Structures are given as structure tokens and as C-alpha cells.
Image (cartoon, rainbow, N blue to C red; front, top):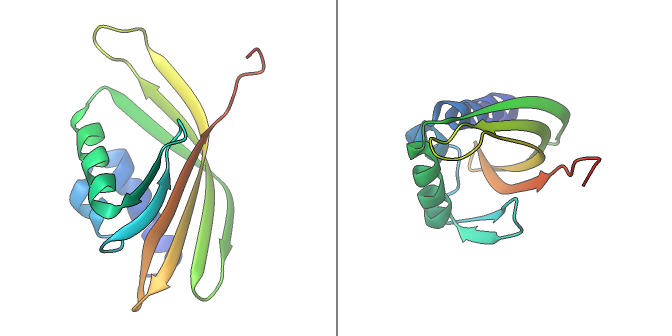
Length: 126
């Protein structure tokens, strides 16, 4: 599978809440996740647990727009603009725009997501 195919698989797994497909794009033990609130996660098992809980929520949608793509023989980097929307049952609707940087590395013939950083876009009024 190419870097671009793996990226599409990873993004599709997020959009469809497909945890097994997401796991197929991850390394076996360590990665770097920088969450939108500045948290740092290094273990794949913690990353999976966070996504399992998030995928269990059914009121959100996520759209991606590719901003840039850089690929070398062993590294692929995608910058995406995210549009996250949620309509939780007992809270006001939520819409968050952010930039997501995903770094993939070619390891043993497979492209694996090794870094994920989500940076919120602050509104012009805030």
C-alpha cells in the first residue's frame, strides 16, 4: 500500500469510526500524539483507548480538506484542515476548525502513522 493509500485508509477509519482499520495504520508500540488541548500521548495503546471512546460517541462528524502533502522514500507528511461538528444531546452544538498534521513512516514495507498533531484554529474574534 502506498503512502497516499494508507493516508486515505487512516482518514476513512476516522470518519467511519472504524477502530480495526485505524489500528492497521499504527505502529505496534509507540507514536506521538499531541492533542488539541496540548496533551502528549506516546503509547499506541493509549491512542487506541482514546479513539475507542471517541468512536463510541455517535453525534459527531468530521470532514477533511488536504492542505499539503510531502512524501519522500521513507516519510510522508499530510497537513489537513479539519471541520469537526458535534450535536451532543444535552449541550449546544459544537463546531471546531483545526489543522491536523499526520506523519507516516515506511517501516518494514508498511506506511505507519507515527505522529499526529491537532492544532485548533482560533476565531478572528477570540
